[in-house]
Length: 231
DNA sequence: CGGAAGATCCACT
DNA sequence: GTGGATCTTCCGA
Image (cartoon, rainbow, N blue to C red; front, side, top):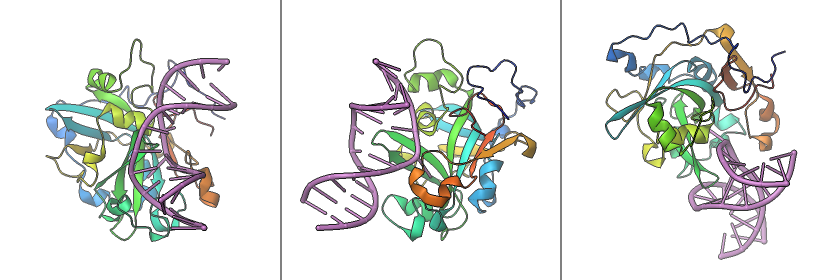
């Protein structure tokens, strides 16, 4: 049984400390659209270890994805597209895989999703947490953090992550497989299956049976996840 | 047209 | 652990 690891990062295995970082800028090239035109159930765990590349004000902010959740669209009671609901908000869920779905939650936070599957599915992957790779000082500024910054404080949580890399509604519907776009996802170093932890999704108590579906994925033992593993 | 709830976070007890 | 912030969306009357 893995126990709560919040606050104890020193002896935690971190698969990334050994990763070799290329100096070539091609390391930030977008994954192809075909990566996203598959089920969110498959895409979500494969996004772990990938890089979110956010271009804003001429700067490049990079996060390594460490936690995701799959939302399975029409058949998933937790999904905004459940039952085929198409509203102004959910319209971007019905774009082909490879677009961004950004929405406002609780009147004050933005959630960043990547649309997956095809334009009839309404599927998406919520990006729940990331580890700063480049531009961390700007992320800290965007988050208005003071003093010492604990692991996970910058982008551990969907609302925090969006604030950190300046994701708002202006990015709704953008293509994330466009190498010249403001938001993209690069290959990074995908997390191996044995390092992926799986569990139920967060904050969907209203979703009935779907509440227990194992569609939350995180890098096992990673300090920057949105909350400690109960798994 | 009104009211409730939300894929969250933070301050405080 | 609890409550408040803040506002769009959605559903029922």
